[in-house]
Amino acid sequence: MKRSLFLLLAMACFTLCLSGCHNPEREARNRQAVLVVISGNNSLSPEGQDDYASLKQSWLPKENDREHILLVYHHFIDQNPVLLRLYQDRKGNPVEEIIQEYPFETNSATPQTLAAVIADAEKAWPAARHGMILWSHATGFLPPGYYISPKEQAGGASLLSFAEDHGTEIDLLDLRQTLSQHHYDFLVFDCCLMANVEVAYELRNCCDYIVFSPTEILSDGFPYEKIVQPLFTQSAEEAMKFVCKSYMDLYLSQSGIYRSATISLVRTADLEALAAACRPIFQNHRDQILTINRSGIQPYFRYDKHWYYDLDDFVGHVASDSEYRSFITALDRAVIYKDATEAFLSIDINNYSGLSIYIPRAEYTVLNNYYKTLQWNRATGLVQ
Image (cartoon, rainbow, N blue to C red; front, side):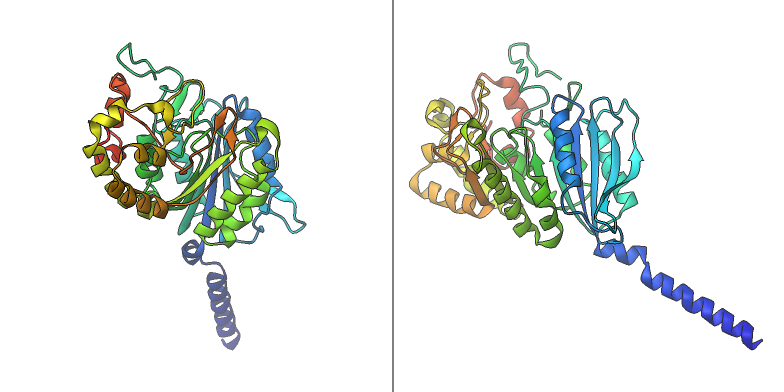
């Protein structure tokens, strides 16, 4: 009897020890998960594979580290898309732990696929804090297909906000809805033309910080071998500043046209005040805005894709002195890091606020009607 009691007590203590050492609910409360989404089933597939290789060679959480989880979804040409966890084994070698493999015909540029990936990542590694890096083609606030084929004369846009897969693209409004599954400490866009004030405002309730570029991004993208560790070891703000600085250091070390980069970091909590400062400016100077000489305002586009102008330079051309003072105070609070090379490819960078904006043109009826659906326009009334 004594021996039986002893065994029962020993088993109870062992069970308590196990539950104390491995408590999934407690682990989730302490866990940070960073998800990298590489939508590379397109013309950028080789560059996506290069960046994924850099990720594997970066600092990685250790195998038994259950508080810092690096997850990657990648989809490349002629490959099945896959969701996996990246970590290093005891010898420091990178390990790819497959979480979910998706059908070959999966389209990675739909909100349904992105939502499924986010849900699968959370099911495998539930976390209290989230960060995300989104990698692909992109064209900011524009409706799907408009950048390539702005069918104004035909009466409707063709069927990019983010990603591209066989002509399919994720609309900004759908992206915001999909990302609303979690609140993210940060979003990093390794894709072109995303640093629009329209994008920032649309996603302001999805995250605390956004890193993005108002111009295109050269194919080398971000220096992943340097930026992964700070995502887990620094505060979100300091990590994002490190990401921005590392990005600029990469391109400032280049020569010729490869010395081309713009980057900015937005604190989303201050975007409401920025919209409030812009609203009276847009209301009081509507006629001036519609007739403004756009050639005198800092552009961020090439190939006559004239939907991206510097926010500060634009507002400075139309606002009164008092309106501008209120505006620049709000802008400086929202954009907490910005940097640019002297030129981006063929674009001279003379005025740089870190954010672009659409300057309305009356003849763009399709684009203007779409723009009215954006939260930025509802808050500021830029397009009537």
